[in-house]
Length: 127
Image 1 (tube, rainbow, N blue to C red):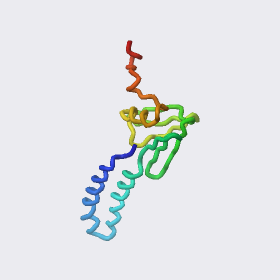
Image 2: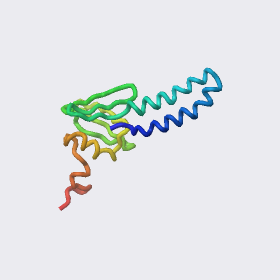
Image 3: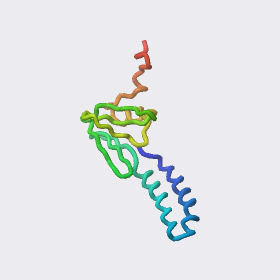
Image 4: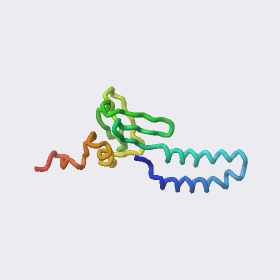
C-alpha cells in the first residue's frame, strides 16, 4: 500500500515551478532538492503486509512488526492508523487512515478483522 505513483505528476509540476528560480542564481539550484525529496517520499513511503507481518516505511526509516507482536490497531485523532505492539510501543502507518482499514484487513489475510465485513453496526450484530 503505497502513495499513488500519479503523485509524481505533482513532483514534475514542482520541478517546473522551481526551474526559473533555480536558473536565476547558482545558489538557488539547491531548490531542486525540494522536488527530489518529494519524489523520494512518493517512491519510498508506504506499508507492506506479508506473511511475516507489517512493515511501515517512512522516508528515512523502516519498522517491521511481526504478526505475533501485534496487539492491535489504534485510530488517532486525525484518523491516522497506528500499530500497537505487545510491548506497548506504537508504529504509525504512513499514508493510511481509518478509511483504509478494510484494505488493510484484506491484505492481512484475516489476521486483522474487517470492520465493515463483520455485519456488526455500532449497536452490535444485526438480528
